[in-house]
Length: 272
Ligand SMILES: [Zn+2]
Image (cartoon, rainbow, N blue to C red; front, side, top):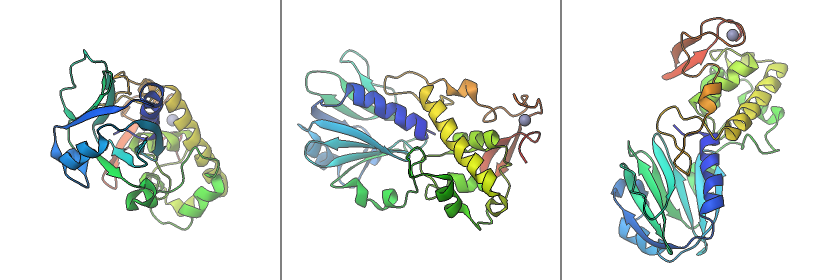
């Protein structure tokens, strides 16, 4: 599932190649991929509009239009946004095609169809976005703000990191990777973390997200960037998807276990 680094990579690709482009027409191939209105209304409202800019909040991508409205996109499990040249054939799992005036298109494809696109007047008033916690790469996300949100919580730390109201944009990959970098066992109750450990975790979250953005994300299943290419951060994963492999720090075998319903990867040698 695309997490913050993957959505941010796509955002940057769209900024570079789609900002300022005018949408000539929209073809909705899967009705369920459009939220809040009929496909016909959706297509009508977008035709002729220019893409003014692209923002990201957590795992949401927001395309601002020159009409003042915005397109909110969530890729969920398998969503992909891809810029295409006029001669490219549309992706196999294409659900919505935005054709640009002057040629080319932006294709939203989604094998498992959990992703969606929604046209809104103001994304900031969407309840789902209002509930999001701090942006981990913003200056306002500090060790202290993380501590405030997890202090006294008896839940294991790892599912808390997946809770988008604690910190926005982390998913299973980067929660596992940040905990390994911080040397913290995923099962530890959040309330048992010392101030020093929380500061280390805060540093690890930011560090791993920045490294992953530099590597254009992790392509573990369907993820592709805005140009249709794979990211390469998966080769730097220390624990995620490496069960049975040796820890690069201590040589112990990486373990996979289920924690609150999610596959959780960690090293018994260096996470305590
Ligand atoms: Zn280790």
